[in-house]
Image 1 (cartoon, rainbow, N blue to C red):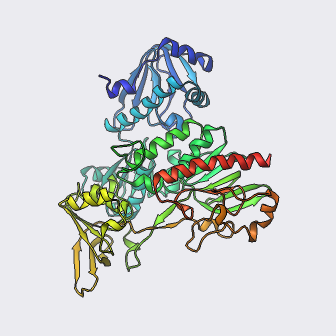
Image 2 (image 1 turned 90 degrees about the vertical axis):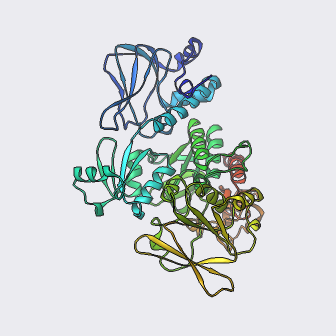
Amino acid sequence: MITDHDIAFPTLTAAQIDALRPRGTLRHVSAGETLWEEGARGMAFFVVLEGEMEIVDPSGDEVRRITVHRPGEFSGDVDMLSGRSSLVRAQMLGPGQVLELDSDGLRRVIREIPEISEMLLRAFLMRRRLLLSDGYRGMQIIGSRFSPQAHAIREFCSRNNIPFTWVDVEQDPLAEELLCRFHVLPEQTPIVVGRGGELLANPSIPELAHYMGLEAHVAEGEVFDLVVVGAGPAGLAAAVYAASEGLRVLTVEGEGVGGQAGTSSRIENYLGFPAGISGPELARNALLQAQKFGARISVPQKAVRLGTQGGLRVVTLDDGSRLITRCVLVASGAEYRTLGIPNLRQLEGAGVYYAATEMEARLCGGEEVVIVGGGNSAGQAAMYLSRHAARVNVVIRGDDLGKGMSRYLVDRVERTPNITVHQACEVSAVDGDGTLREVRLRYAGVDEEKVIPTRALFLFIGAQPRTAWLSGCVELDRTGFVLTGEETRRDGLSVDAWKEAARAPYFLETSLPGVFAAGDVRAGSVKRVASAVGEGSMAISFVHAHIGAAV
């Protein structure tokens, strides 16, 4: 029987090693030689030919051995393709010989030798899974579970696959020891303790991303074939297809890889996954798939403006940098709406949440929670949280849960004993002093309100498009979604550009030639993961057509 260890640490055959030899460099190594340090980026890929290579985790109080690679085995995990900072250190136990391939050479192997590619990718994914399940500590985030700042840091790390250990100042005895060590008061948290013991005091998200090596380096004057704005299902699908077909593609994402789908506890109606797949897992797999073809993903970088420069397009980011590209794919998605009631904004991240991931579920153990919304996202959240919370209250304004939720989910919700559906109801008020304490419900036609003591309110009440950065550049509908294809009016600012193009817009093309839209941000799109993936993939054929016509 094949075990997880067998998948994570296979041995290459002599024929497979021979196939790699022309693509790499033979290198003699000495005893104790370090091949890369923890925190390094752009590590080489090594096949051990003679000797033993030790992989260690130096993140804890003592250096811990992860594994020893012997002849025929190889180094690396997902960070070798992502370009992120390494979580481990590699060193030789004795003298030996290795075959070394740089990151570009490794990607060529993955693209060109399928039988080796499959082995490597399965091993890389399993190694990361085993590392995290085997006590890897990573960096430490110290703070209060009720702190919005601490929640934002934890959410960013979770959504972008950054391993961390959470230390709660209210509950974890280790917190006091760490705070004393760094001379930090509880009210000065959150703090982040880096892998090497570095202290980051209440870091901003960009500061943390830079520390972890999540941003892509863009050379001055570099011109891309395609810049994708948004790394949800549509953006990731576009990145996969564009990179696999040889386009120079950069994807920028302002929050977390996977978009809204990446926060879903379970996606059960996506083709090919009869048992369902979690949003984070789908996002991780898609990210690795894009990176194996050479797509570059940069987080967190938000687009703030779209413009033109001659025949090229320019995406300006929130840090002032400008990305020059032949084409743009708008896949910036939509964000959940909020409730227009007093005090709600002040409690975001301190009891008011817009996603129900494992992190939020841990806060709900044995407690009562409230979910507002009647769509599939609300239904999946209710089912997931019901495994942790004492009671889940689902609040809908209508009188039929089946109007907005898939039948299979309605049946599950109604059969779950600790889920209560409140129909013809709405949240009238929230109360709390720094953290949420209670939610008030008002029923249609009833004067008396119901008070639910709770520390967690989840909102899934529809979405609004992230299109402010497109204002004045492409046509939007009256609700802010991007018009494409025949829906565009092709007047105003872009009329000259269309005269020069001498053609009608392609199906997913906006009112500005060379700028496309896919997924939830597009007017008329079907708000489903499969539809977003299809549109993101389809857009690349139009990108090719536009670039080809311009040559």
